[in-house]
Length: 346
Image (cartoon, rainbow, N blue to C red; front, side, top):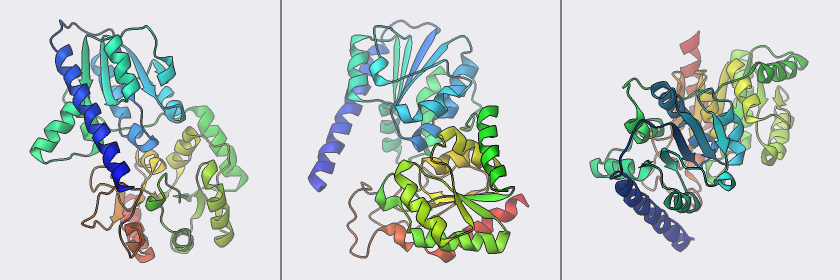
């Protein structure tokens, strides 16, 4: 497992070096005000959320451009709803069209090969920003790092924060669900995470659900994807005051749910980042994540994170004989963190 991780890291470094060379070569070409911009962000939900403010900043300072986003299919819904985005495509949609500017927030070898055969007037790569951060020894929050990548396209120095656009139809779908369960004030718990090492034990979530009900009088809506249904159902059995969100809820329905919630508690995950854009009281439970880089952005957010010497790791293989670091997070710590963020909005 260690050797495969080393190979993956070497492959990633080679990609970054190659993309920086392409960036440097294309900077020699004449440049004018762009009419079309392609942003490549082939990443997960949370990473995409922490980049969405850059779309608004690009369009704010270049209102005449056509802005296209290349992303993975499962995040296309939240990207397409963004008012600054004109078009959303997948990797298979890359064709003969050329763009004045291509921005690599996270590309891939296929996207880089396409750029080499369809060179834009300018190519801005995250590799250049990563190299600068490594040289200075400072790793900024990912939302700030994404701004640094698109900075050459900006005229204003005023930064924006990521936000999710929720439609009236999404709000109504969520409203029907809430009314059917007589839910007005409620908490949202997201117990899942893409990596097993980032998943806090379900029995601890169950205790937290009961604490939230007893202390704040809130029932809980448990959220998750199809892969989380068994976990969600088991939590509803152990904590009767909890209700599972419908199986057909989309990411935009989750956003509409978080927009109305009084509290969010969950693992370091995409849904946590979606929730943080709405500024509600939020507690993020972290294990092997990079400290300070992927923290929730909300004004009323906090984290519980035991940072060990082995952190950050590959998030796949744990070397601790005592068990994954996320197990160090106790129920009392999470309940205490909830108490810290809840009074902030009272």
